[in-house]
Amino acid sequence: MTQTLDTAFSALADPTRRAILTMLLEDDMAVTDVAEPFQISLAAISKHLGILADAGLISREKRGRVIWCKLEPDALRAASVWMQGFGQFDPVDLDAFERFLETELADPAEPGVHL
Amino acid sequence: MTQTLDTAFSALADPTRRAILTMLLEDDMAVTDVAEPFQISLAAISKHLGILADAGLISREKRGRVIWCKLEPDALRAASVWMQGFGQFDPVDLDAFERFLETELADPAEPGVHL
DNA sequence: GCAATATTCAACCATCTGGTTGACGGTTTG
DNA sequence: CAAACCGTCAACCAGATGGTTGAATATTGC
Image (spheres, helix red, strand yellow):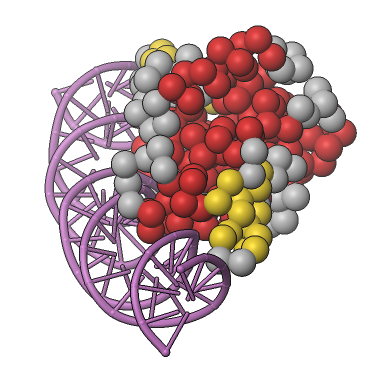
């Protein structure tokens, strides 16, 4: 968790990592379960989780031999504030967001439409 | 302007590019003027502007031998919506944003505090 | 204790990124 | 027309990124 904006935005730039965050929105998950829907190796997922953790976007807690991953939405605050300043965006349109998540969830890392 | 989220977030991940966007927030600028406060070469700035344009975050218009760069804040909308969904952030706190811009403007690409 | 499970580490690879320099193509201006 | 200016292009480079595989480290269950 170093330079908030640099690490947060570059963490968010990868579709696999955004898909992981979307999954964690539903509930905390073990690393193996996070990896399950993706075709890439567990080690690759572990790296992605490390990047998300460094950016402060998730936290990881070891209980027994399982590591639980938890979304940390506060880390998005700085980035969100920065962005909103450019567009005077309305507070989020939750309907649009729901539709959006469907496309994100539909196919975790395969690009799809994405607005 | 391909996958909106991928290109937008990765464009925003670079501090030089965020500094450029911040400068363009004030007014449209010619490429040479955009480059002026930075120590890197004009060609490097030209590349950054290309990346910002590909992400749809700016537009470029040639008038005579000068190319004018213009902020296109709409491109941030999708990314902003995506992010707000994770934190249910309040509509932007403009005071925080002002303080934030000061640190961004203080030293264009040198990291500084940044929240 | 041993085997299976959960996760990371280390080495490696191909590709992308951000920077450089020098040459080039338009556009003014003298 | 020639010189100066604006910006991009092309080739190159060092370092980061995202992926792989195989070995290593905990922890659990039989």
